Image 1 (cartoon, rainbow, N blue to C red):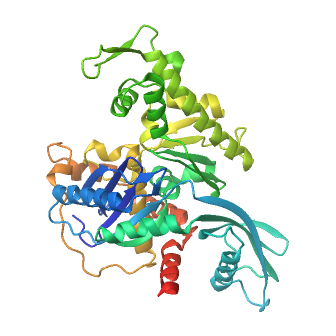
Image 2 (cartoon, rainbow, N blue to C red; image 1 turned 60 degrees about the vertical axis):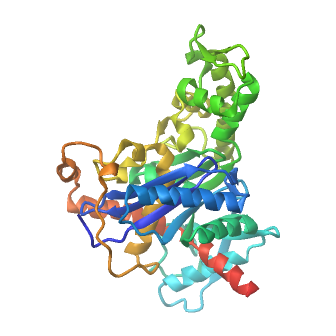
Image 3 (tube, rainbow, N blue to C red; image 1 turned 90 degrees about the vertical axis):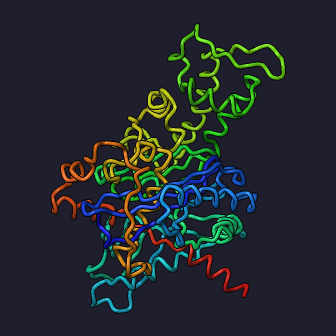
Length: 459
């Protein structure tokens, strides 16, 4: 066991579920899961906290389940994901004329350029969550990934600015604090999911990460190593469930069960003569439901979601095979049968399912490697990036906590040997660390600081 590393906790507040995962890196740089709990989410709609009391209850239940999985665990600070259709993005351009042109460009000047973007006009009631520099220019030289060390008179950059509703962000923070936790940082969910399922090759080839959750579908588009676009599409798994409920006249729980067990995203793949029998309510006769009709409803809504994805890719000029890495589907909704085929048909791009298991130590229970937990695993990775780059304060002494038996897959104790076999060489490991570093290093997360600034103003 590697007890020289901090235990970092991710909290994913979703529309259908709330998940808490505690993880620590082992000596091979892989995440060992030390605690895991989840609960049904009731106070969240389309990724936004609407009922704070219900959300607090759900967070506490997930926490209790996490403690039940490992009673030795202490949970105080958490990395929290933020999403919701109030999240918007825009592109801006910024330039500064340098004072000391004879000297090399420094980090301080880049920070000034980024800070200037926080003055960009945005609608009242919104706040800038994140300013992400894309490519820089120095005088007439363009597409510079990192201008530190260059010389020149004028330095500029294109920026991807992400905004969100002030009250929505406050509601997330209030829920977390009232559940007895401290928010270490708020992280955009599409970026967290991306870091969990994407490798360095994907970043270079160009990919669109499509995270299909319960209430929203989050999109993050990467091209030539740069985050080009983010969007939150206000349709996801719950919309499909509601469509089934309305279209087939069944209960919501039955609709969800049918979707998961018998649902297909392609009508052509569904058997024409297959039927599902639903028990009748209070003495009513049982219902026979055609599997083909069920697929019809799912395909209609899923095609709509993928049309939105195509629309966003066109907006940034990255449709028509420009993304060599294609589309990576993740989130709970990505587990629908035949979704890969539908995605490829609608978007014209290759597609695959993104699992967060690349970063997980072997020997964990299979439940944790599901796409459902991509965001939560990504939040832990973000915490590790902060720790490795000394961006935030972490405890100096780390408590010794073992991986609980309940979270281990029963493999006759072969876990350590497997990790050793899959352990990459030291050189490769350094490279991989740099990949993740490069990923999070691009983003100057300021959400939690902004929230504190807002609070200070009111004091």
